[in-house]
Image (cartoon, rainbow, N blue to C red; front, top):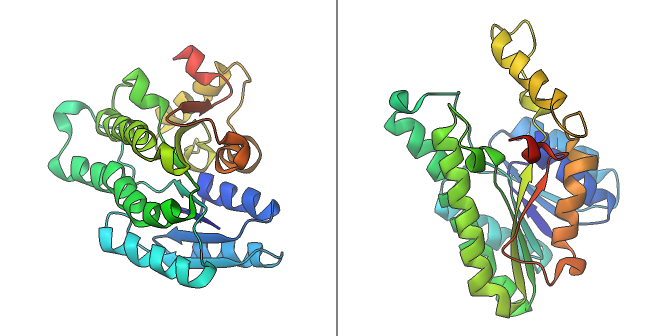
Length: 249
């Protein structure tokens, strides 16, 4: 059984579809019930068992409540995909507010830690666990306007490495994926921000593969591998699924 946070759209939904296609049972979280239930309804048409929960990932008690509910329903927690995190508009560092920073840190590295704390005790008992976190190339490149977001993602990568060091002897691996799939956030030409729309086009025009990643078919297979037994000797790593985009950073 795999827990996926932020599963109602984008990468989280793509990962849920891909894992369901492989026969995994899932616990899916998001902030809004309606889109989450739409995804769950699609997946339940197969043999996949799906449990949904509307939670605020920043709330530590919510993570522990969800883990307890998952254990009651499935009796085990095999994997955790930490996809959920709030996003703030592009902002220069001098304009960043305490609210901006607090939101990104509470829903990013803090939430990742709370969910790890909630599931790892069960994984240790089982002698096996797989945790996949989500970083961003923006944290590596220091892209202008993305300071707090990049910093939060680098904090997640740091937690990933520490968790891998502490829990590897218990059969628990922890790895970080840098995904490129941003199609669900790409602005349209007529949304009032043509400069940002052009930036997205330029980004993928300069990508070695030349396109955005598909969440289900390009990003999710890597995550599925990191959740599998085939990855049992891989931990503490950062792996980009971005069509080689990081080569152009």
